Image 1 (cartoon, helix red, strand yellow):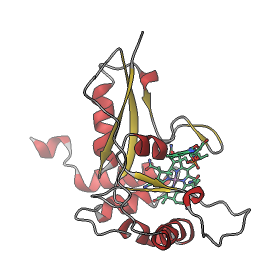
Image 2 (cartoon, rainbow, N blue to C red):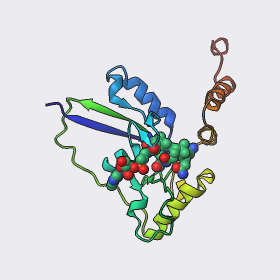
Image 3 (spheres, rainbow, N blue to C red):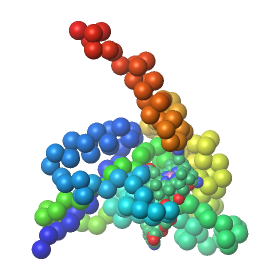
Image 4 (tube, rainbow, N blue to C red):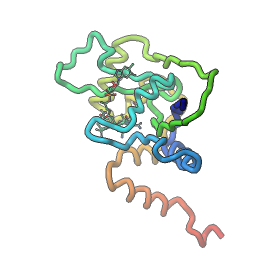
Length: 182
Ligand code: B12
């Protein structure tokens, strides 16, 4: 029987994750690479990367249902957020790759590290992520040693078609043209 092993990639830059996924495409069928941005419908992504990160033991997924003393109105949606023990919130949750027919008997289950000491801190994280995520403070809920570059942050704050425009401009300004390379 086929054994499925989901690999979880945690890196600080989305470009690195995408580059890895692109290389893997030579060996792994497209259907086995699940991209986080791919949606089947509203609130229905192909892959729940935060849940995947939690069960893989990579980053703890903090959710409203874990809070006993929250004061949010019942009908208010509070989006959950994952925190990595080293990168805090400064990481991108990349594609999940399914490896078929791969077994790894030594690969045991790993619990994610709950890095927030008490419930008030967890409430603060959820409030920052839901109320004022633009100021990026949620990412610094614990002390981190690494974070995103200014350019990458700028890119993440753009939605839709603006991203292609931004990347084209960035490429034109930073990457040498063919004739300049010679
Ligand atoms: C749609 C989406 C949005 C939408 C809607 C917001 C939302 N959070 O739904 C919009 C465009 C507004 C958005 C904005 C942002 N987003 Co967004 N978004 C997503 C996306 C693509 C899907 C989220 C979703 O719809 N989930 C479906 C719901 C139903 O899942 P759920 O609430 O987790 O429920 C499941 C779990 O509870 C699970 N479950 C049940 N019981 C248990 C028990 C346990 C123990 C566990 C672990 C799980 C579990 O079952 C439920 C489903 O049945 C994800 C990527 C992804 N593929 O997951 C990124 C994602 C959540 N976003 C992310 C980010 C960073 C942002 C922004 C900050 C953007 C930015 N530029 O920086 C803002 C923040 C706004 C906000 N307050 O949420 C990151 C979060 C990273 C992190 N550290 O957690 C993700 C993971 C993207 C990524 N690849 O890194 N986002």
